[in-house]
Length: 422
Image (tube, rainbow, N blue to C red; front, side):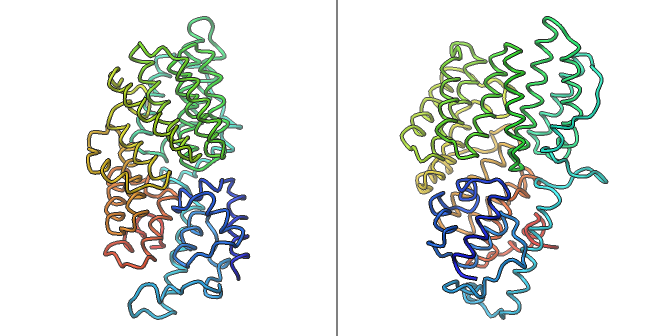
């Protein structure tokens, strides 16, 4: 199989998964243009890199014939030790079998015992039957669901969300006046959680959930809810390759908010941060850095409001986003100073702590420091075990396992987190 055939295989798997070249590149530490060149056969990649792409795109082992690819380095010569070709072939099969098996069951970890993984693409169009419930009870259940998300308990959240959305819909439909507005607020926030989870799963259901969240939020008349839903819609737009449109939506909504009020000021900060990252994915460095600076100024003017969003509007969070932005812009060396001053323990939720450590892992990986990358990945696992089982992180782990440097503990970590069959 030559480079053109390899490229066609990767392109087909990407399209089948409904992923953009930008998303694949971010997961495998390549630019979107480099992914395009790989898919067209114009850029040759070595076998460890091919493994990273295969792991992320869930390409079955039998589809790969890397040993026959002209110009590709055999893994046995890369590792620099005395393993035989046969031993390396066994390791390849174990890795890819483990990745495909883990991806086939669930993206973000196993569900409750005996429960099938929730397919949000189906669940959002076939909600279960539900009866209206008192608003205080509904709000309390949504608060519990939000805590599950912030604690990175994605499997449990996935089992809960369809019923919660159905109950919120029934409650909204049975309400009038002010109660209906409050029910719309509850419905919007339940759909926001669905959009957040769908984004973790690389699912197109994020578009559906975000659109429904925004419709309900606008009916509620609550600016915070509108901002929260708009952020999710912008993330869905960005992940489909529409970074410029996402930045426009976020900055327009940020301008429309009354920044003199603490609550809306905090929302504005969060929209600016997401806008900065969206601009970076579109390779617009000047806009990305300007939005980061504006967000930092907002944190100085307005205190964070705990629990307002799943992202806190704090200086610490601005620094975490700054690392993300610099990684995406291809300048991870500029992020090292930021990472060194970042106190991740000050981030209040497991999901955000895991995200910060993920970005630090990507930073060190881009800089070629496998040991530091592995240390950061272990911190992700410590903060949120389900987070480290996501496809992008399994691909990062695969890269370490088959990289040029042997790192003690990586194989066990790969087996434990689903990147390698146990």
